[in-house]
Amino acid sequence: MGLPLIGTWMHWALFGGDFPGNILIPRLYAMHILLIPAIILALIGIHLALVWYQKHTQFPGPGATEKNVVGVRILPVFALKGGSFFAFTTAILALMSGLLQINPIWVLGPYKPSQISAGSQPDFYMMWTDGLLRIIPAWEIYPFGHTIPQAVWVAVGMGLVFGLLIAYPFLEKKLTGDDAHHNLLQRPRDAPVRTAIGSAAISLYMLFTLMCMNDIIALKFHISLNATTWIGRIGMVILPAVVYYIAYRWAIGLQRSDRAVLEHGIETGIIKRLPHGEYIEIHQPLAGVDEHGHAIALEYQGAPVPQRMNKLGSAGAPGTGSFLFADPADEQHALAEAEHEAHHKSLLALKEYQDGEPSTNGHGH
Image: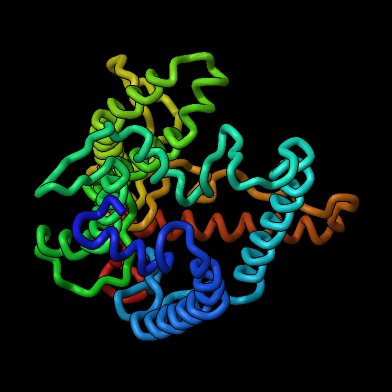
């Protein structure tokens, strides 16, 4: 009823008269069993149609382009992931059902709508709105003789939030000038401004969610309820800016780390002392070295860059045999001889290449 001009009429239309009325429950029941499920089914169909038309997005990798989808086989990778997710979900639900308690009616007594227990918070997806309501000052304005109470600001805030979520892709397209159709994803470090904005928004959401339970926080930690309210108000202004700066600098630092590896190689952890006394760390180049012994720099392609030697298979070979039985001696000897011969051939090929001897194509490459 606090909405100017239309609030009273909306109130009468919703409740069929004064609050609470006797027509709201049947209307909500009809919406619950008919209208809302129909909307959900329609949205699922629209979602499947959009996935079929636009295809799935994917991270850059071997064979991945803007016009194809590089997936994985159902067996064993996808089935293993799906089965693991199902097992984790079942385990968490089982733990929650056995360890967590909700609605202890033997403590609360019979249900009476007029009696509300202390410490009542809404469902988790509405906590941020309740927290926003708790920390917004009790500002009331009176335009043209109409009273707009504090609760209206929450509705305005929700409209702004969802409006920004819908408009953000179009705003970014307008500000960056990028109108191309993209199916290859970007790593968070490759879009530091977007990452920082998202991190700031998440921090604000978490702050509002915590402020939804500021009375519980004040009770359990024995602090003033007014202090928690002012912490939320000050944090609403300061926290997003701090998180934005940290996330932005973090993304830039990760970019520099990737480019340093592509340019100089992976840190091996081996320290070498030069003849004149200087200590240097040996790096493993990703693309070999040039004629002067310097690492050949690679260009960043948007895919994860190995940062440790074990990402290159340098963590050691698996042992032979099984858990209980060793391989036959003759088989193990034959495998060792074949591995030694393959390694020897690789060294000979590398020596021929470094010495500049012509290879089979006649161009020395």
